[in-house]
Length: 239
Image (cartoon, rainbow, N blue to C red; front, side):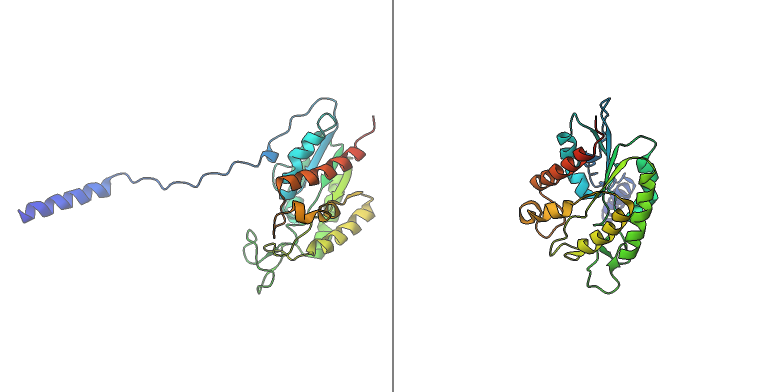
């Protein structure tokens, strides 16, 4: 009887071993940010391209709505990241289409601190951590990006990097000032006007920015969009 019981247990375990195992569940794929959806042109309106990181993604849809009937507002199909990413992708982002206005920014990803893994933020005080792109390289990269964009014949508008608040992970409060000063040298030399979104944000920072974070509330992004839309409108081709 004991032998039969052991045989039955062995058979059951063999069947269990051979049974198809459930595939591990994949993590739910995050839906693309709505700002990355391709915009459709309305015939006869000037074409505008927004280049920037997640801050620009946050204000893209509001800018598009504010300029409805005035301009076709497009953006690059991704988070623009640091200037090094811009250098790799700028020609693809510009494509062969005609742009009347290009409103652009790089900075928050350049000044963020990283260590061995560039995809992760690092504690600025930790040994071995450093800005993703040094100030000197940032200035040099911006100058090269400006030359590439100027070749399109579009009206270029530099957008200053918005404030880094105290406690923002992987960044140092106020570092945007140094990077904006470096950018100002490039834009002055190239004769490119500036949309000072940094000053605009700073004027109401406690009301519009998330706590200890470089990002903004929905109302905050709308506040930024209002400034961006005004500056773009001022630089659209005159009828």
